Length: 309
Image 1 (tube, helix red, strand yellow):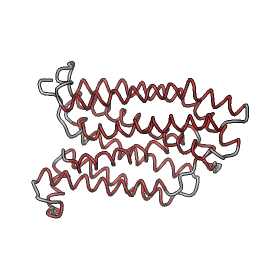
Image 2 (cartoon, one colour):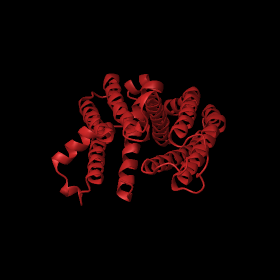
Image 3 (tube, helix red, strand yellow):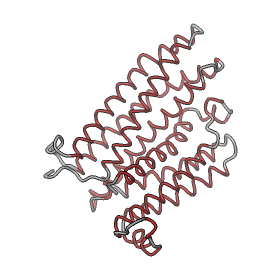
Image 4 (tube, one colour):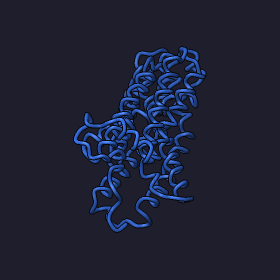
């Protein structure tokens, strides 16, 4: 699956699952009451069902590509059910893919049956999306070790994925709110300002989790060395990921310490337009960096660590 199609499918699946899990979790954490009350800036319509359905298709295609790679089949059309059954029953990656498809089907079912603005349905979608997201760790580098080391590596990967989804979900919600707040009532703009201020604690926890689990995962995959980082595809992509992560941290700091206070002051002066425009631009840049990181993660998952590490 190291080809372009394989990387593209992995990237689309990572992005889909990060949003499907992260958006509901962030809404439940920061805006549960407002979401139940029908606040317009927090509405996502039929998006959860669409994301879950698209995720099912991506997960199924990912499993088919895995089976093609392992069986040596000339094309996807040449695959037989017996080959898929062998991959699912005989490999961790195949079983993880099957669990992922099942979890996404349940998330789709919950999304379709979810009554408008009901927290129970949102929790169910988030729960099954988390199962699907966590299965990515079992089918990737997180499953490369055995014994206690293997369990620690696996759970470090799961926490890393969950923290990343939380950040991506928060960015999606803030983007939705900032764009819908352009000509919105005063209450909606104030809700956005309050959400930005309240994200400080959660954002710090997310960054800490990503940093600690990222260091742990690097140690498990590469080891206590930097050899090969500048001379291998894996190392160069990893350094690119670190650079983008640093960019996200910088933008998040600007949002927290400059743009959020500026928006609050602009609301008090009843002139939030310019502050909203700056915030939208910053959130868009941060979301772009997050998307690029997911692309690099999808690519890194197809590569081995630097030789000699």
